Length: 143
Image (cartoon, rainbow, N blue to C red; front, side):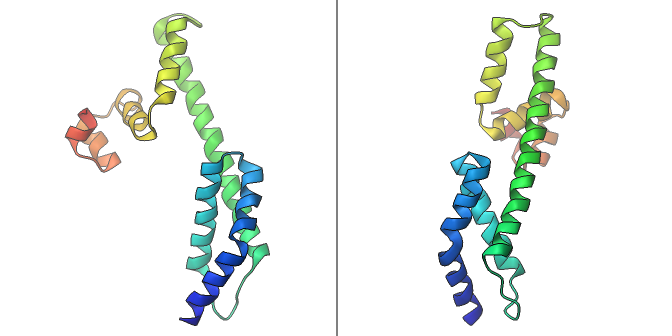
């Protein structure tokens, strides 16, 4: 029980500082909130009552999470570049209003819907296969 009390104290004392630390580096408030909570989740899992850690440990963990976020963003941007190239080559034009609108429409989709499209059209999976990957029913994939 004392371990939980100490962790709550750590959380209350450092949450705002860790959140601001992350916000200054990722420039996306929602992502910063998620990364902050992930940082404290890791702290909870790795806590050792005999070796308590404080703000420097939290900052180091946050830096690692920020680096992972940057890598994820780089991969996502590379994927978008590839998709845009594929759309342009299918359209047979280097750049057109239709191509631009199509790319914007796909970017505007919720993440889950985009993933279903990518798995279906770029990975050429069936609805049943996409359902397994996404932990959905085939009917949900079709919808």
